[in-house]
Image (cartoon, rainbow, N blue to C red; front, side, top):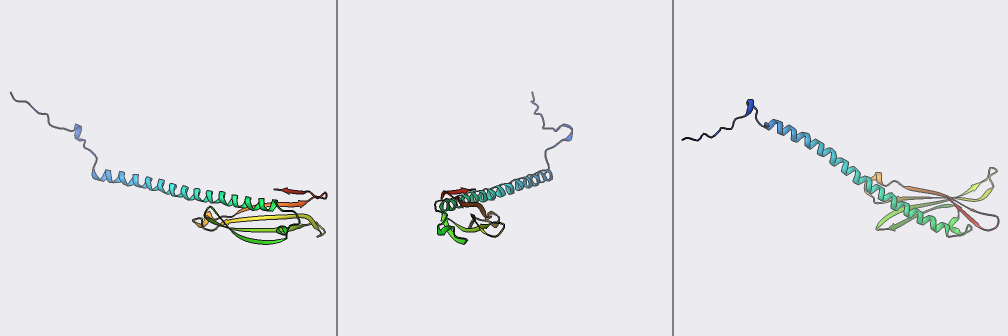
Amino acid sequence: MKLRTPKNKTANGESGFTLLETSIAMVVMMVGALACSSLFVFSINNNVGGSERALSMAVAQQQLEQIRSVTFEDSTLNAGTTNLSVTTGGRTYAVQRVVANETNSDNSLKQLRKITITVTPQAAGPNWTRTPVVLVTYRSTLSNGSYLVSN
């Protein structure tokens, strides 16, 4: 007795994927993967910029604390611009401190000084991540000799 072995037949003449169909599918998947990878690069750069701004804010707050610790008559609060270079956490920041006397409408001096602190990271990757952090505060003296600091 002979055993018959069935032949592999395809139903209705269907066959697998052609080389052309496979190549087109690979190109479509590659375009999608490249789009996703560019989003990852953008998010990494954005996170670097955010951490630089956070560190710049910390430097600016340290500068404000130094100003809060001196009296109103201290030479640190004389009107003018001071440029500093501060290194913290292995990174360098340019700090600009501007102290300006406020005047009344008749141009007489108030007992009020406007203090602006600008901190800019110096080596933080791409230029768009080196945006400065600016803090503005006012310092005044009260008639009874006590001091008031407001943000």
